[in-house]
Image 1 (cartoon, rainbow, N blue to C red):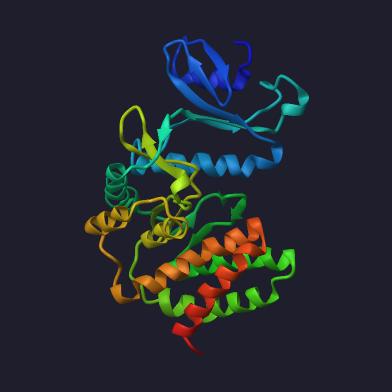
Image 2 (cartoon, one colour):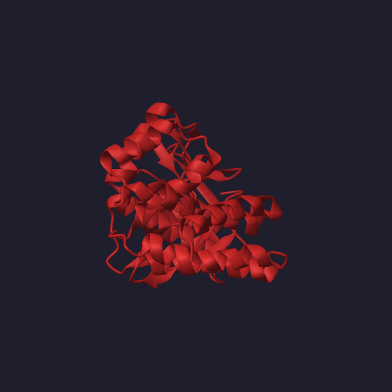
Length: 302
């Protein structure tokens, strides 16, 4: 069909036999009225596309319908490319969702589904993920780890390495190393937690209400298997998710013991996102990163 790349159309035809499609901005619509979200990236974005696709596959198994269902993804090869310049570019097709704001009611239903479905889906391989995923533009190396402390240690190390490469963050990185050496072993080492599937970037901008069903929807994952409480961190930083979400969540999945260290763990998990925002957006977030580090280091002195 005019305006629809052949690889996108073929993906849709595998999902709905005999349909025709018409392109419209970032989605295509079949003759039956079913809409699909589509995108084709640059060759340098192959890992991002693979990571998002694999995360959505896992989420569909863990909590069917909570995130848009992946229809197809892959890399354009010479057999389907319209032009030589397209070879090596990744493509992605998923359900299209008409997403509105997260309401108090849908926030409560989201909390229940996270606690009882997504955060109950356990890895059999340990903590981490099988492919790199991306939190914003930041590549999370992932891989598999035997303990949560080891996994989180590696995640923080990845951010500190990026900040060292940028330059100008010597003091921030020095304190970050102290957090890795003193705080992570002391705070996370004793925990008895299972590696459960996380969204990974669960702020209000990646949540909403499916306008067609009234049910909660989450999208743009940067998934890995980790401690469930880590998935709540960025939601607290930027707001937009009702407080009822957190209360409802812990009705179904209580705080990990020791519960009296819940807030300290929250600070440590928030630190990841403050550091990542420093990597992505610069020194405006360095002060918040430092404040979190200072608080954690004070709680766990040498």
